[in-house]
Length: 374
Length: 263
Image (tube, rainbow over all chains, first blue to last red; front, side):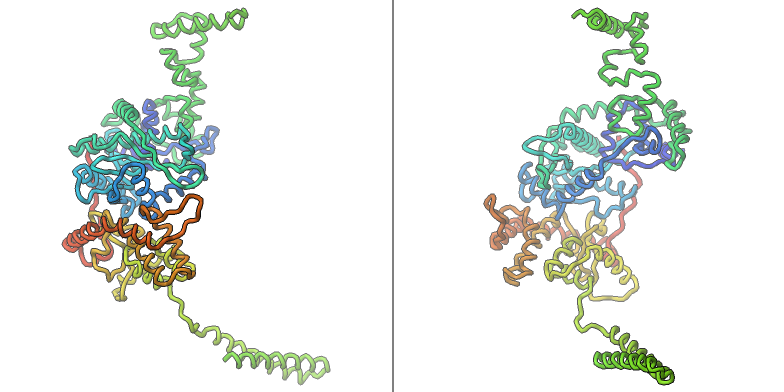
């Protein structure tokens, strides 16, 4: 069986996740988790797999927020991108004639075939832009980028738009959280910049594949947000250089491997119509086989997180306290062990550093709380 | 016809009340006879009523298809369903269900396939390297190929052409009419992104200055028009070389992409 078939088999009847750059960015943030990598490679949607069980995660976007987002994006793109053109002219220095548009959504079927078609045309358009062809577009909507995951070519839809002037490509994202009086939700802005950085990385890799200069893609991305509670849009120019560097490192550190490990070849994600107990059993045995890497911020990103947390709690994993604590206590895996070391248990060679810190901390703790000294 | 119907109904009613009187008197024979006459009159009335209802209306309202084709003809550029609907409503105030355009699209192709040949068909605009049918953009089959092709500058250039047409049309129907007001609303939406077209002092209401709108629209269109038409004609030549006659109307097929190699 080809690796591609393996991955489809692996997904089985479980729900499929549409591969977008947003999905890639989220998965890469957890690329230390083998289970997450497997889900990404097989395009399995983990969001709802625990539905109906004790570990169900209230996931996905609030439908009202989703609707507002859709409305805003429609407004920005309405009437042949009239608002976007205005924003690019007013905030990004686009000249009045930089209005060549190509909407790759139009004319491509919404399926795998359409993805490949859009990926082909995306490459043609990128080449035209870099070579400063006369008919090169200034706005590309619905670009599809490729990258290699688990030895396979994977296709990722860009949510955003790539705009170009003078051969420089800027990635763009349209989001609907508000920008008021020069301020907005920084966490959301950060997440948007992460996505945009991955977009930059993918476009640069695509250019490099074609023998074109990757630095044709600018470090500056365009983030389009509504001002206040209305729909009037504004455009922020954000430098993404450091995020792109981090993304590059993450990507390089992702175990790829042309062949899937043998242990994976008999696994299959459970179907949604399986009963809850069977689903959980299957998921847990897969987690045992493949390995997971729980941290508290998984709760925001992954539909498996409550199940993973429960498993971490069962063994008292130090990861429950967050990555910072894990870093301070290298080599100490469980919280029980932490208590033991603090009480003076002889440390293993890998635990020595942590054991000293824990013993000092316990000493301080006892002095203040037990003996009342400061 | 209406008189006859009215007379017959009155007849039936009179006979029915006479039947009731006869019953009151105890005159069963007369009552029976009168009732049968009343029944016959009533049946005659019903038949007349059915014929009356089937009569065709004297005023002919245009069909959705006719309105769509008229709109695209007047706008003279490839149009989105939203634009067609908004323009139709603005022109005569009659509601227009934008979803009807999707079924027109399907019916047009079917009609073409049967071999019958109408004056013109609503066809998709063509775009991209393979001249596929663009989604949500319609042209007319009798237009020259270059006008049905969408080039990179076409969305913006056509947008400006729509603005120009709206200005011209508002002037021809005369400002202050209901139609002009509706079209003015549509124009204000469309001209919003044209630099210099709409301006109002902050806090004052936006007033549409047709001369200013026209000037701003033509200024921008001037920069794009020649290149847009040139690109479309060039692509039309390529399409004529590579596409069959049918595909030149309904769109080409996309070559199946097998895969991409990446790092």
